[in-house]
Image (cartoon, rainbow, N blue to C red; front, side):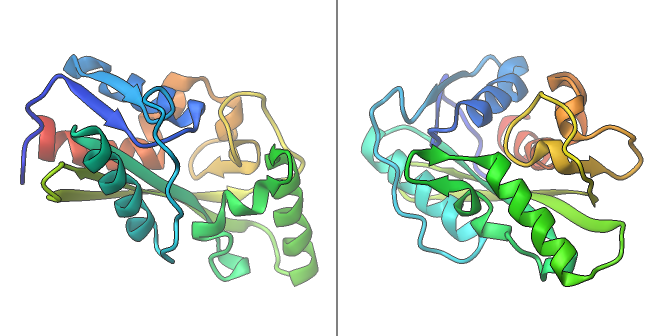
Length: 202
């Protein structure tokens, strides 16, 4: 397992909410986090059909261009009654001509669940795969998940993405009703990060 030894980590994302979460999780390690948008890096096409495949594309593209270790996250929600959809296409469900509309994506998930006739609770899981890549093409991979269910109507105004419809097991609040600290203690990203920290930072 290769250790991170620098002081600046490039995070290969243009998603401000995701960048904030990652910066918060790495704050205790004194790492300066910089986003791909800050560096003017383009977003590579995500052509793989798995979380790890797409995370690898993003991490290696950023590491090669910037000459820095780069961390990429590919994450999404898998809904059991929809055969694991939207999965790696989680963000695609939100795409419109004017940007991403996650309200529309959550509505689609709800409508497809109702149309499927699947009984509640609608089981789901959030998945996160982190890939840490170096400019020499070496990488390390860490995956995390959290189990829960899709609820309706949407609840909460925190977080991002599908957070207002995801209620993790053992909790009575959605991710969007939790503050950042509450969510970051239990999320799929926190699970993957704990493995990343143990592997590359401790």
